[in-house]
Figure 1 (cartoon, rainbow, N blue to C red):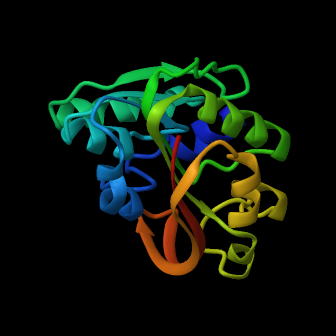
Figure 2 (figure 1 turned 90 degrees about the vertical axis):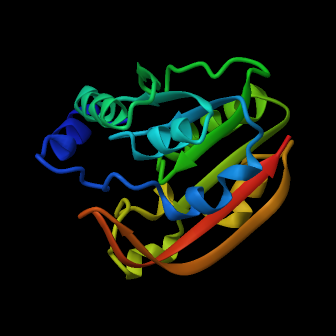
Length: 198
């Protein structure tokens, strides 16, 4: 994770991805059993705060202290508690069979790190635990409405099936949808969505 870059991006008066949850998460979160949920690369907190408001016990990890401070403020405004952890995903241990859900929303990582994180997520889920992900596909480079500018950081359903072996997929699709999330995700986008159960 490139912490200085994200500190700079988050160092704005507004929430660059907005304060509302990701639309896919808002539609599918109920697939996650009630209990302990981990949000990866949670940024400014919109998704972790949403899940806490739904009654989950939420832990959120991010490499940016600036993002975490904004996330803490958002949690206070919404009168919920989230356990925020400042850590790089390259060094963060998700443990073994301790999460009822793990959420990854537009968490784009270098291939080797992504493979490690996805393997760690499968290991970290309890039996019947759910992994929920939305990410940009390589086709997103044609849209330029958000996400990283490098194809190797983007994901396909085939890539995810391989990297998340050990999960049964209730939902796995690639589609185009209008993503309106603050100033930095705005417009028609090519995404992959996944709900997988251990």
